Length: 256
Ligand SMILES: Cc1ncc(COP(=O)(O)O)c(C=O)c1O
Image (cartoon, rainbow, N blue to C red):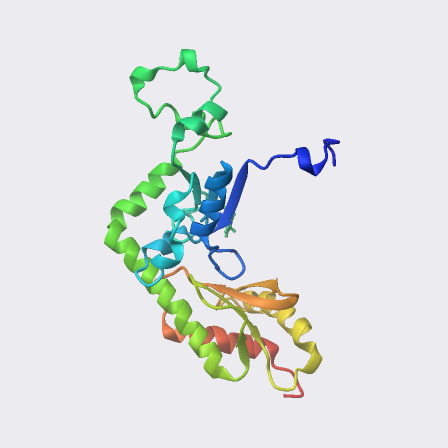
């Protein structure tokens, strides 16, 4: 170890759990992890950069049990909320902790008369910073709570619809259960045999090059996988069918 200390002398300070992983959108058992963190006096952080807003979907809320126990939650409005990049944020149970960690203004010089907000630059590593909050505020003011809930529920429903199309297809396989709005799957055309990894690895770039749909690639359980992240509520069933057809089209091989 670089510290020269034995693992026994190293004390963890924080537990980080996921509320919506990148690959599959899976959610950790947040309540159980919060319990472990509380038992050992650890900071409990939740990475909800992509998935935290899923808590607003009626059918998904139960999966997020324990989110409210977090000391901090990372949440990117530039993801599910559709705010132009870059606009990430962190929600803190006790903002004073971040202020004490990052502020360059010693506590004895702080202008407490200005209220407990201080400058945003006192709450993170960034000193000079643009007015990102305006974009987040404008989006939230425009959509309202009901609009945000509708956006989240619609995109979750679209992900389930895509998963159903995949399961009914005969030439695609779902690689993970859909828990948020991410669908992890794989194209398995008849006759592909042991070329499945090679074939799926080539799909994302080929689909992107055609310019009609966008999906990314990843590896899940050692297998090349495709990943569709549904964030646009204007997406239609026809768009989902078109995505699968685009994949079929770019993988069509002479022997098929
Ligand atoms: C779960 C999760 N955490 C963190 C990140 C990183 O977010 P950013 O690119 O805004 O730093 C992402 C985005 O890709 C993500 O999906």
